[in-house]
Length: 310
Ligand code: NCD
Image: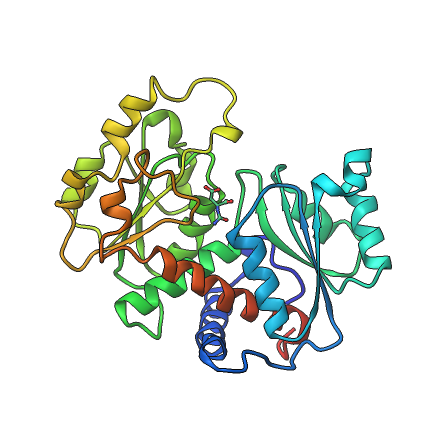
């Protein structure tokens, strides 16, 4: 495997292989010396055209734990603000010695262009392209779900509910594709303006009532942030109405099964899409997701830069 741009790049077997490896690599994070020599001499560049906390830092930690050199490159302080194109920037990074470029970009398809246009030879990892995909997020969510339900295999039979601004969410797209591949049944729920019909073709069912969805007793409820920065036009009557209908409030928390799990990719807007009560509930596994981000990104970097199967 050379690039990871979309969940469509992975077969079910590829995905399970990465999850198994991530589970193994997670153990390195519990050691006193958190280092493996696997990527010594390799250079990973984080090329971020959008803000990020978790994703950028966890790619950096993942690469460092595998002994690669890491360069962080943020749009605000580089020649990008002087108008340099994505192609010229990527070719420059490769000329400087990059073996892998981790790219986050507001344009859907940016990572695909870099990976498939013959501009460069470096491996490309999509760390979020517009509203399109965020494959390593879906992998870390799947790893978290496997751990929560104690599975070493796929997620057959697991009922997952994804709630909120589905339309603008690359997390929702990648999750629906991966979870369906792994045998889970996925429902996406939100106001009709924020849930495009196309999600049915990707393997999810659609709901426009949080209460109806909760009555189906999901095993996992994943809450999503409302992505205002991607909205052109009006998608909701008011914030108050959104919170009333779509927030994981204390009342809705009480409808969850005792052994349900609450996920959120972060950043959370407490009091808006999720109440503090829900975010701090013992059933919430939000920080477990963050930790698993390091393990999954170690597995992906290892596979692309040193994988025996590539
Ligand atoms: C998400 C993203 O950037 O797509 N965050 C993340 O990577 N953990 C979701 C979001 O921004 O709401």
